[in-house]
Image: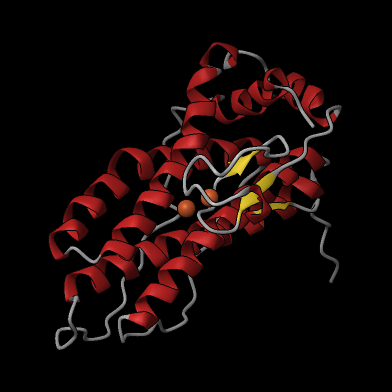
Length: 233
Ligand SMILES: [Fe+2]
Ligand SMILES: [Fe+2]
């Protein structure tokens, strides 16, 4: 289990060089299927938008894991792994809702671009903040107009889950001037342990002892995340 202070080091990495301008990844992809004859057409459009946003993030984190492992940042890869699983839970929740409302998702490729681990952290931080400050507030406002409660609740789950990451980033802004290599070295000496709620994607760094703060399901719904392994060809 890592301490709050250790967690701050991770957040500091995420905030290093935060002003990086290259955020052309995690792009949204729409779904062109016609849901106009179904009961919640706008909800379905927005659920699909959210689904592809989460899937794109998931696929990026999956690549970031491998890059971090190849560069010797096992603990940063572990952090990416926890975030990746959280994103996949969000995506799976949307997919289930889409199917329950009578529509479907067509699988398709998404463009995935990776850089070095330092830049990948920066991009991840920017995209997390975009989801908090723009993407989910807009989706929740629009989706509320059709009052499909399970869809609204799931969007709220995702939004709050991403807020956990942003809170980490903001808490540690003061460390952002520390050189990446020094910070990364400290992180690689730690022994982090991540848990993700399988209901809402809430991600925590200590073994949960109370119900999930986002969805309120009991602690049995938290999954301890395994450390990722470097894929071999
Ligand atoms: Fe997400
Ligand atoms: Fe939860």
